[in-house]
Length: 354
Length: 251
Image 1 (cartoon, chains in turn blue, yellow):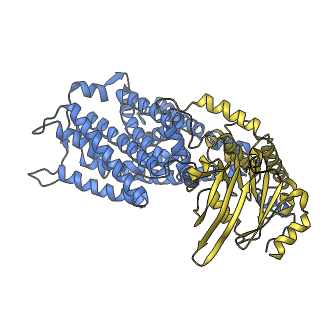
Image 2: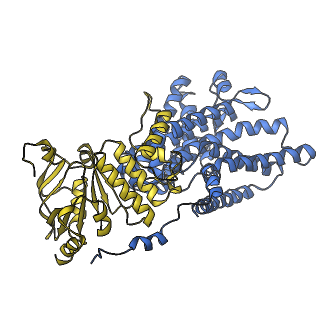
């Protein structure tokens, strides 16, 4: 029975969330990229200062090491941008390492030996394979209603199988690296030295970042992606085609992963089956994304934060290599950092509301 | 009452002979409901009276078994959310359909973004128009910028943004389903005031509420429902709070 009378609103007011949150925490939440700018600057500053003071202990600021970083960071950062956009839309792709390996495999195999396709055609074939992988991940997730975490786990193992098959050495019966020499012009374009420790990969990262920013913050697609990840029901109610938005995000993610794989293959002149397995690329990418302030639950994130997250992750990896720390330490660091970043994001969000 | 040929007497929207049953349960039986120009009509009744089924039908979420709809006398189809919106109807739910992690501006334009030829957003146009929307439709203190996040607004401010969004996109019938139930006293006052202003500005409101005091304050007319039927439709001048209370209690 409803009561027509009553000051029920006064009671409800007490339960209602107060309007004014803490403005400081709100600013921290809304401009999370700034936090990571500060963090990365401090960390890089410390490493640089230390290595300049004690060059024998830490060769961080040397020309050689900075060159390595400027070729390695963009690869991870480009993968992370794709993973991050997808995460903003509320989905995960943990098959990126498979895409990262399979796409350059396709380019390397079709452009050499008995295939001998022109490199341009091979690159288009690689792009097509990436789009197909993204479409497959997206369709399994949105049309069959399978959580993307499981769907892409499946496609990851599927791709590992394909990679093992195409990389099988006929004599040893073992997966083997495949040489990748796409010609001097492409090598210069995708991995040439620009000036000092700056390599072409840096420019490609800037290009991908600008496209990512334009899509996310200035394009209708980005608005739909944020709506979909932020509140799926609300997005449906205003007529956003959420399933198509997600499939598109899966395809973008696969294309960035494939492109980053091609950059990597061009740089080291070969494609390795181990890219797909021991590299832990999907973990690196997810760590970079959440360290950069992107919400693990979708609806919130920024390109700048994602890139700086990748810078931080790769620099730590680099420092650990320089001080000859065992590889396992880095994996431990990745896991701990990811969890810490998620906790921080959650705490900041909660404080901002209080 | 004016005669039938007078255009002012044609209701803005009519639902005629609406019936809907779920299995053996008759949720609505031969219900007639109309919304006139520039009015706030209170849809009253106890739980299970059929109010929410009627609202769902009007907003295109549920299709009736029988019945027809007319807008300004002409038959219309409101069989889906899109069609209902095309007929000028917008529903504002209790749990506001806004995305909390996004700015007011991006919420206002959600799903209807103004874009250039390549699909890029017209940011400047979005910003100026959202500021105008906020200034014109909802003068609620505290909303200083369209770039504020919805999660940083109070419940009443968010409700006001949802209303402003609906009004801006040329809907002239607002269905408000318990819009004040989660609001503080002061915010409730503001939402009630907005309804009055909207009605005078040409947007008719259907106000679904349990709170008869609120209904009596803002509504021009009351429709009381019970057991899937409309029990009474009465204008404010011809009734009293006590009579409405009795109507709801006795049926």
